[in-house]
Image 1 (cartoon, rainbow over the protein chains, first blue to last red):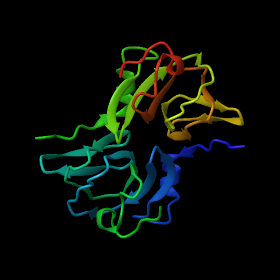
Image 2 (cartoon, rainbow over the protein chains, first blue to last red):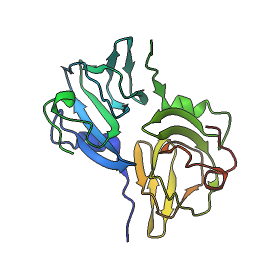
Image 3 (cartoon, rainbow over the protein chains, first blue to last red):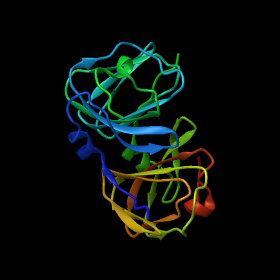
Length: 117
Length: 117
């Protein structure tokens, strides 16, 4: 018997072990749905060659910068960074985010100090 | 120059042409991110053989039934129905939902009268 389990994304983000720690909350067609809390962190520009990347803000705000501009996301807003596009997240205050990328996409270089899939 | 475009998912759901009309708001690694408004509709049990299916509630509530149980989703909650699992959405009042499936998954049989990708 396989019961479906629902996930409250904001609760899941609040339940991660700390800032910058990703929790995988689901798998979707080769992708990983994860939640994370981040505060005051700007990652280096980077590219995911194989995977598009979806960001959806649960609480707070942050900015995604690309070579051609930037977009600031508020709660309820999402953006999809196409694979191959150089980008970096710029976080200046506490933000809680849901992300989806293909499995194996996130690592210490592109996601900060910690990743616990 | 490729600018990122953000999407407010609830606004997008409110902007669809009517009830039961899916709007595709993004593409993600072979999947389609879509929004839809549904009211008082129960689809037949069905299976997506090739695709997992993510449901995320933006406003309202609805229930996903499977052979082994059911789960009722409130705003901010998501569930992923694994490919191959028989299921049906049961909607008794207005609900606004974001879904993600692999491209080509939704059709009139499994999604109701209308699908405009």
